[in-house]
Structures are given as C-alpha cells and as structure tokens.
Length: 227
Length: 265
Ligand code: FES
Image 1: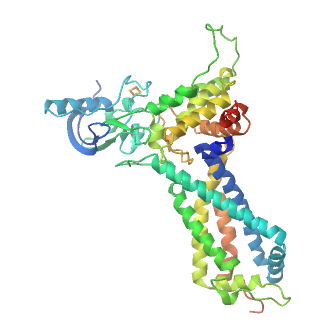
Image 2: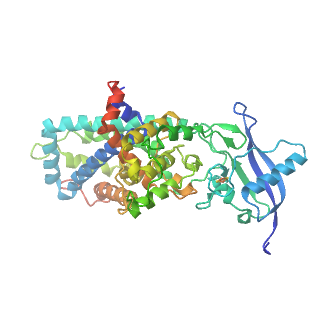
Image 3: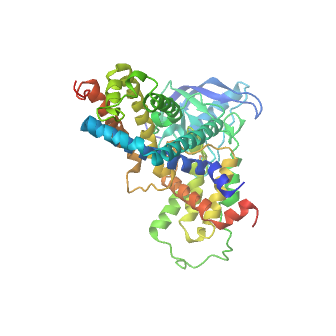
C-alpha cells in the first residue's frame, strides 16, 4: 500500500479528509448563499448573476464535477468511519450517559444522510427543473433564463418552502458540529482561539442567510416582476 | 470517625459474565450495611463477602493501588466511567456520594479492543501494544545526567507532566461514543513530544502508535470530548490536536515512513 493510501485509511487521516472536504463544501455553501441574497437586488440583478454563471460553462462544469467529487469523498469516507466506530463498540452499555457531547454531533451520520437526500432533491428541483417543470425553463424580457421568477414561484409554494426549511435545519445541525470540529481534526485548534465555539454562530449565519430570500418570498416581500 | 458515618443499603445491577466466550447479563444484588466511609471498591468487597457467605460466586473486578495512581480500576458506574466525578478514579470514589436505597448500574468498559475477561474485568492489552510500539525513546541515555544539564522550559515541562499523568485506565475509550483511544494515545505521545528526548523519533513514533491504535480496533475521534470529561487525570483535548497535526507531518513529510511503506527502505 502506498504511503498515501495508508494515510487516508488510518482513522486520523480519514478525519483529515473529512475536515478538508467538509471545509471546501462549506466555503461553497457560503458563496452559494451570497449568490442567492441577490434576490433582494431585484430580477435584473439576480437574472444577470444567474445567466453569468450559466454561460460560464468552462467554469461551471469543472466546478460541478469538483463539488460532486468532494461530496462523494466526504460521504464515502464518512461511511467507512461510521462502520469502524460502530464496530469499535460491539456490545452497547445498559446505561450510558454522555455529558459534554451534543446530540447533533453524535447524529452526524443521520443529518449527513438526510442532507444528501435533500441535496438530491434540490438538484432535481432547481438545477434540473423537474419538480415544478411549468415554472422552470422560462425566459425574462431580455431573453435570459428567468431564474428570478422560478425562485419566486418555487417558494410561494408552502410545501417547497417547508422542504427547504427542513434542509437548512439539517445543514445547520450538521455544520454546528463540523464547523466546531475541523480545526481540531487538522490539529490546528489552539486553546487561545475559541474554535470549538465556532459551530453555533456559523450554523446560524448560514441558516439565516439561506432562509432570508425564501422567507421574503413567502411573506410577499419579494414578488414576481409586475406583481 | 466523623459523626456523618452512615450505613447504606443499595441495589446493584452488575454485569456478570463467567469467561471471555460465555454470554453475560446484568444481575441485580442487594448489598447491606455499606459505610459511607467506604470507597466504591470497598463497597464491592462488602458485596463479595455477602455473596461468598451465601455460597455465590464473587464479582470479579480490577484494582491494585486503590489510591488513584495505577490505572487498574475501571467500571462504568451509572453510565459514566469511574462514576463521572471530575478527576476521580473508581478507587477514589466514596460511598458518601450515594444515598441509602440508591440503585447503581455497574458495567465493564465496552470496546471491541477491550474484551471482557470475566464480569467487570476487561483485557487492556491493546494499550500495552500501543505503548510497546512507540511509548519510549530509544536513545541510550547512560547514567542520570546532572540537574539542569539539559534545559527544558517550564511551560514544556508542565505540559509534558500534564500528559504523563495518564494512568492508562481506559476511561477515555469507555466514555467515547466511538470507542476511540485518541486521548490515551495522544497523551502518551504528548508527554514525550514536549521534551527534547522525544524529538528525534517524533514523527516515526506518531505514525507507529496511530497504526497500532487502528490495528487494535479502536474507533476514530469525532471531537465529542467525552474522553476529556471522563479522564480521571484531567488530560486535555489539546493533546489530540497535537497528535492530529503530527500525524499529517508524519504522513506527508516524514521520509522514513514513505520508504517503509513502499518497501524500498
Ligand atoms: S486501583 Fe489504582 S488507580 Fe484505582
């Protein structure tokens, strides 16, 4: 086995992989969130942004491929770790009282799996446009893909809103542990800096940032052009 | 004896398992007349006297120094290693913290790497294997050097001593939801790596001890820090961060490890 294979198969190396892939996915989540906040800038701004990204196919496809690879590595290594950790305690305690760990941290495998399902739904919904096909694939006045209207029509539906709300709760729970954890996993946590406490603020920041535009749509602050 | 002396009657739920291969189960026992001055292990001695008097098999449990320094005692007590009092081993846990009529659940450490030998005794050879692969320095030190011959900064000496306080009891593994031994292994590394003598073999030692830990079947660290809360010697999670950092260096920059792995050196 090469030194690199031995490294990533070790428990510590696997945690390094989880931390690095998790961090990169998190950075994407921030960029993605900032992009959607442009819904507050009106149809022109949002559609210009959406079409700019859509037409940048030299960047778009490698980015998609990279994100998919990161996600698959993150999931595959996680499955290996969970299997190993379950195997490390074959007989459960009759009484076991964790005192400092949070349930969200211990439930990373569950929130991770649910998030994976949510991401699949999100891609079918917005990227492929197959959940509400009649709202998608429309063009705006300038002949651009009308991403703004599809966003508004999408979140005017309470069921869709609730699905995304659930997805963002999962994301916040998952990141609450992940963001507090990655510096320690990479050995970069230092007692002088409160890295362990980063989880909650980061999770709250992403949750609020992501839920602002859909909530504005639901309560009628963001409307269809001309409505 | 102080006036606070009282006697307790307790109900114990104890894991009984005749040997490694046989299945075990929780068995309830009444134990009576336990002095509040007794330690937890003395309470088990009293139980065993009462069991022997009735012609029953006494409960096997590990112990040695009974003064909190050897790491031999163990026991998951009411779902917490060593009973969950901060920085306290089971032998130093006293019955005055219990009330008359209490029910107490007593189980062995649960980990694949710590198989039950009998009742509450587990086999902690996996820890010995980790130590034997790297928990030492192989420099020939000769006779004891003069004091202050080798200068060690106070902060480094303190951190080495803090890590060296580990008594290898296994409470970290028992407390961890993943059955991970990271706090133990990291403490053993940290106590050498804050001293000059530990530096020459630092990366090789880190790589080797992590491999031994993985081979023994311990889980991975998910940063839950239950180990830190359970440690009877208050070892800090900081040592795990040191291990994580050194392991990356051991994998990516340590030449010896690369050579060994591809068989060329
Ligand atoms: S018996 Fe030695 S530490 Fe408890």
